[in-house]
Amino acid sequence: MFEKSINLFSRAQQSIPGGVNSPVRAFKSVGGTPVFMKSAKGAYMFDADGNRFIDYINSWGPMILGHAYEPVVKAIQEYAQYSTSFGAPTELEIEMAELIISMAPNVDLIRMVSSGTEACMSAIRLARGFTGRNKIIKFEGCYHGHADSFLVKAGSGVATFNIQTVPGVTAGVANDTLTCAYNGLPAVEQLIAEHKGEIAAIIIEPVAGNMGCILPQPGFLEGLRAACNQHGIIFIMDEVMTGFRLAPGGAQERLKINADLVTYGKVIGGGMPVGAFGGKKEIMQHISPLGNVYQAGTLSGNPLAMIAGYVMLKTLKENPSIYKQLDETTDYLRNGLNDVLKASGTPYVINQLGSMISVHFSDHPIVNFSTAASANNELFKKFFHAMLKRGVYLPPSAFETWFLCSALTKADVDATIQAAKESLQEIL
Ligand code: PLP
Image (cartoon, rainbow, N blue to C red; front, side):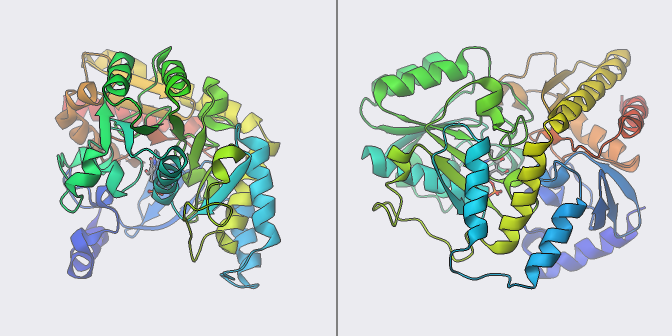
């Protein structure tokens, strides 16, 4: 079934570290060979061997309208003839900024970058520059990209590979990153008290997606917001996953929580390498060239990335029913999975909000990193492979959320539920 992928993987390892350009793709934690993709359309991906998969990764979030969404593809083709990069401002960048500001709450000014990592790294620098303080608080199992400050008790691949301290991150940098358990407000309040006047920012995934999907418990985000107000701390909501996915205005809109700074990535680029950070003018005006907090990028605001993101966001803004449909399809998936998991007799937890969902094989609620880590993740590995064999492409780790796209039909979900039923029968 995977002969060509197996050959490609052994060839890739001769020239690319571990054969991949981003670690979780290597399937190291679930074992086996990564599947090498050739094309994708709508809810499906097709690999080098000609297998078809129903895709629940969707490029780790960006492809909310499905793969190769025609208006995005056409726009990229049209714009490519004007140049693939100017390194000078364009009207398209203004249109993109205006569109984002019209959709995202609490964003007066927005700066485009080329990845979610850059967005979060820049937001932290801005928060430090604005407050004149050094330390930040992040949450165990949250992932904000691979910048040094964030590789402390991080989620996603760092959690998947159980990396405790990342060589190359200096102790000085790591010491400025304080961590707390997700959903544990009292510990955050205590940390703030212990480091009075030292905390520049709290950064959080408002719905965590890098330790599986974990929802904020009622009052948690509100409590963080209040603590930030009280202590002059910048509240950064990392909406790289949730932005334009949970609602046109992301988690800020869906959960009715206001951020001081917000970071975007994934959906904002329509599948092209894009990120952005934005917020209130009072803070954003400290960014260079308005202020002294330096931040730059040769390819920032790249025309192909801008047009892809613009078409994607405009489609979402003009068709809010897409969100309703995504929610309904994900509810349908959750109910179906619930039935087959219950019938299997194995302990499980399904966490979901909107089109983010994950399954943990666990007899306890999954509310933070330690509860996610103590689930039966060995069983998840078997489930992953059993589903892959049946043409369902799940994230190759229990520490990742699944993403749905609007191209996914009820028939696809029915096929997924049937595959889950057969997979559970095989592995239990
Ligand atoms: N923030 C969150 C919440 C993410 O999930 C990710 C990537 O998965 C990032 C930041 C980093 O984004 P990028 O991989 O585009 O650098």
